[in-house]
Length: 492
Length: 132
Image (cartoon, rainbow over all chains, first blue to last red; front, side, top):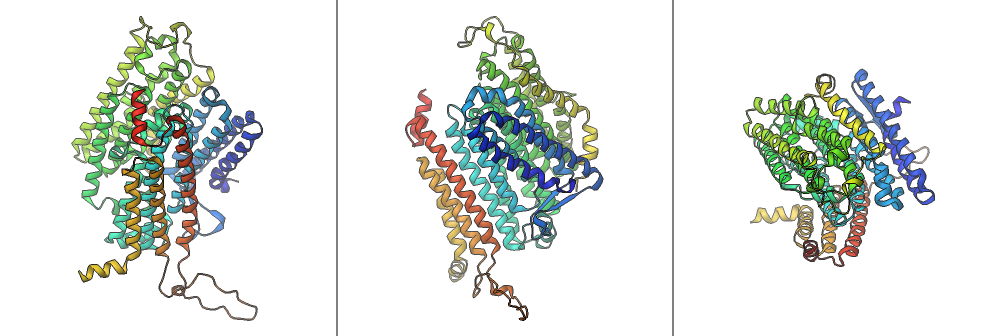
């Protein structure tokens, strides 16, 4: 049974998505339980895979029994085993919290929503587990297409934001596909491990370099690195809050994982970091992304928009830290994938609770919210502290590694950008805490919701939020173990 | 000049794909009508499909179907140069499916946009959003 786990991890949610679609027509009440059971099973499988990785180091699964360079290979190692656990965990926690929000926002479409939800998770898991460059493109598009549909379910300007995301996402995926095409043209292979053995001999080939750059640009669009970020804020803030709290923590982080995977296992670190100019340019782009993301976050009045711009700054952290090229920076970047996914989930769940109970999205209207919704706001504050980087929350430790990487690489611009961004985040979150805590007297601008009617969110939404907040502290406390057992074996 | 013309003729498939790709990108960036943008997106995707299909081609090669060996006959030796490379074509079957699905999602979203604002012109939509 355990031998089949890599394939089961993908096929199980894939088939479940179709079953949920069928039940969406027959009886919508069954959709939610099936989705929960599927994701629980997926979480179990990914945890089992992670545990077995500690014993066997690497699991290679041949789809259809074809040996790797010809057939598609699923490969699990230290790097993606933890990402698999992260994806299923975030998806499950968010699914538990999503039920009331879905019932409130679009109960009649809940069948379609859960089917898309599970299909989205399938795509992400597939991207993470696959060892084949073209297979990765297909799964990238499965994720993107379901993502567009999930965003399109939202209200107000969601369809327009979704359509813009379609354009940008398609350009990104197409660039990636083109880059893979150039690699195939030169090497005749699509298997990542096989390509890694072929590329060193072709280091000087301009085609390979061009393919590499095309792949990177495609992924930069997909992960919303600063000048290519335009699609993200509107798409994330207008989408239904049950969907944004799934898409926001996972999409950008999985794309960063793909970048790291391509560099480590496909292009090889020796080739990727051989061009000094390229790495320097990418790090500087990341620095601009951090600064601009922070500054633009400061200018927002909408909670979801503010969080979206924080994500853009965080993408800069990870891309910059990784392209510094030293082990501290890379450790920080990989650690930050896990931490940032949890932090973003934490914040989006808390904000989702507030939106569910009060319909408030602008944080000027949050006056006195801490006394009305103490648990949700505690979760929000813990998430905020983690984004700022206050110990013992996990945000502190990954930022520590990133800053250390910047110092080792003598890249002081990156260090200053990180500190600047922490400072801005402090202002962002303390501004909200101040509004929520201290100015409770005047409630006149809360439209249609008297202060007396605001209550704490239902228990089903609080528990996932509290678990996430607990995980932030826990993963902060166990950072050392995480780095020793998972990140160190990955380092080239 | 002569070398440039040679480059143009010898690699005409790449030129065709690059020009189509730029047409698609131009339409997606410069056009204000959402349907025109979607058409541009489709041209853009098709250009990459064309690129993949063209790299499988070989001069003087035939379709990659190997005739069935009857009982008693010896296995014919297969020379790869005699057959075009089928793998890029197979990959593009998947990519075509993806691009059709993308087109479907994009058109569905365009219908929703039209229902909401009553227009598909981007500048009109933005003025509607601003006036709200």
